[in-house]
Length: 155
Image (cartoon, rainbow, N blue to C red; front, top):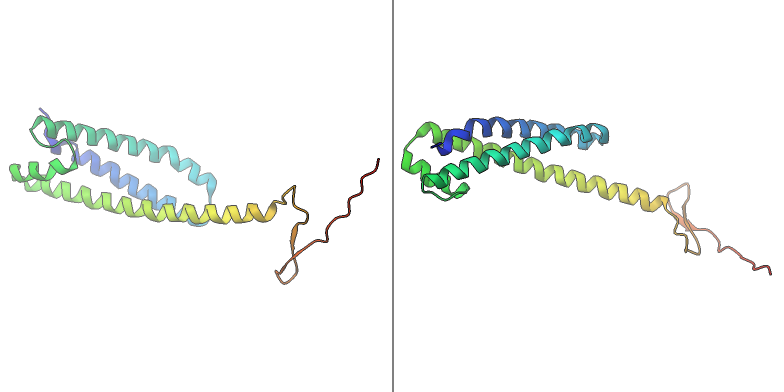
């Protein structure tokens, strides 16, 4: 039977790689480098899938040992084992996971900021087809509308 802590080294390796990838992602978001961001996405998805698979294996091992098959089952299992090396590995994994969550939060804010900026630019570039007038910007950045058009119906 596999011990619940057997996956911790692989999980630690994957989450550390994910944290580094998310730091790169953050730099690319600040630089608005969409091409490079697109190249990171498949690697990020692969790491997240591997982490989910490893967590599933750990949960199955916890269930097999008679503990809750979730993150909550790890602490009671560690307490029952008295294995300081396993506890240290688990604590390190939790710390890296917290780092990843924070990076994800900040990166999400950067993405939302960029999306809002892009939407503002798109809105400024669009002229509604049904609008009687369009908004233009003067040299000092003030908005003004064009005069209403005079349309004649010939018939």
